Image (cartoon, rainbow, N blue to C red; front, side):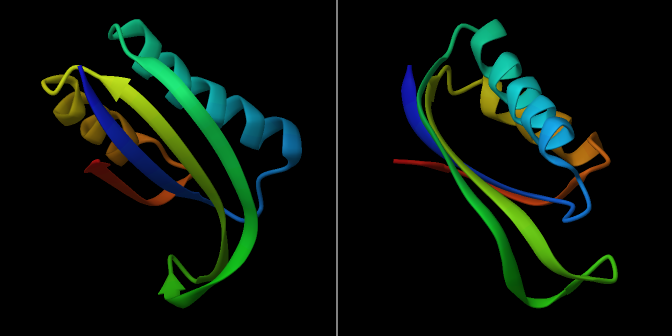
Length: 93
């Protein structure tokens, strides 16, 4: 298992329950692959440096997780295909 940092920017119009549902979905993907969630930090709605999908703001979520290295490609694909995700970054620590 390797340690990863995952930062996801969700659409700013998601309400609290929808945002929590999306966070749980991402955490579920990691745990289903045999990984563990070390911490989750909700940074809240922040202004972005440039406009993405006609939006000036996004809801930022930071997740520290340990997961198998082969799963990072699948997580990348899942996040890319999820509609409310505007941007994401997966880095090994």
